[in-house]
Length: 198
Length: 184
Image (cartoon, rainbow over all chains, first blue to last red; front, side, top):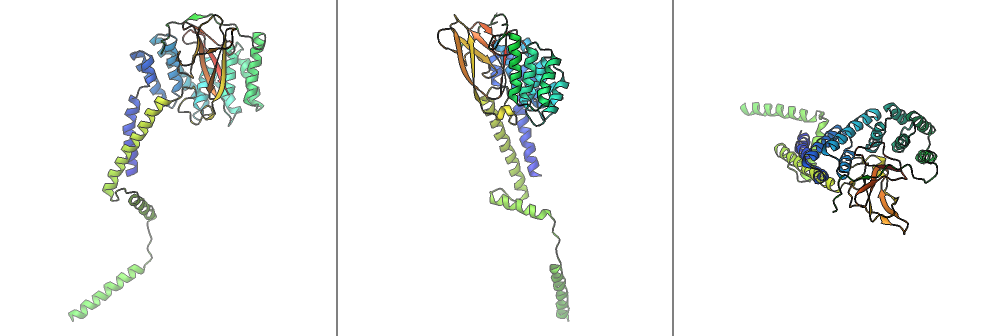
């Protein structure tokens, strides 16, 4: 089959070329060894069909914040694992943005069952905002079980995204003691390394 | 006699041939497809003989590979930096239009403020804030597609500060305060 052979050749030529390609942002911003390790994780994610851009951004975040190479690699590997667990929870039909949001939710301590339940209640509608709000509520200090119950109630009623956002805002106001009031700020921390001006 | 004999044989052969030609022919269903492939090949200048066609297919494969490789390379260099990601062409976050998002930070007595995050590759030089009045408020307008973004402010090039108006990130991998912004 000539066409089959053509496609096979295309794949043969492409696979090593793509695998060998390095993300220039990594090599420019990280030391060689760290960039290579991160690239391996990124390539692994690509092969697994997971989103790769969040991994690159996690590495760049570490580079800018002055983290050590070991810490950057550990953070990227952890995120890779969370993205994989997010896909296990939501299935292969979830978008990259949904997987990324779900990975953050799992990182915040929410159980995969909560994500699956949310997905079942939002059939055919994007999950990003409900998952984000759920994660934010937990980050604000709301117990995971209570936050999950509130978000699932909204999802069960078929509420639009802005009502989820309104819920989060309402909780923020209540927990911070007034609209527009800043939360308790974390202490200011010096940058580990002064960023390089470009 | 020999001539008569030859005529008789010839007649028999001719009759068999005519009979054969008159017999309905059952064509292989793939014949049409093969013929169309051949016609298309000739119409587009592709070599039509099986051997030459095979070489053409290999060349086509190489061309496809080169084209895809070029696309991948180009994409790596021009890819927008959003959490939604490059390959999320099917995701709402990728199909949604970018919209203006305003960030504000109260940082009196600061000489410069910048924001770094998933939207600018965490580049401290990419997105400076500008002072809004004399009360120490700094502002910047971003254009972001729907999605979820992590970011933090850099004050005077030496200290990090989260956005007090947005939730903190649930995770803090590197110790600095990071905030989360959800664009819908």
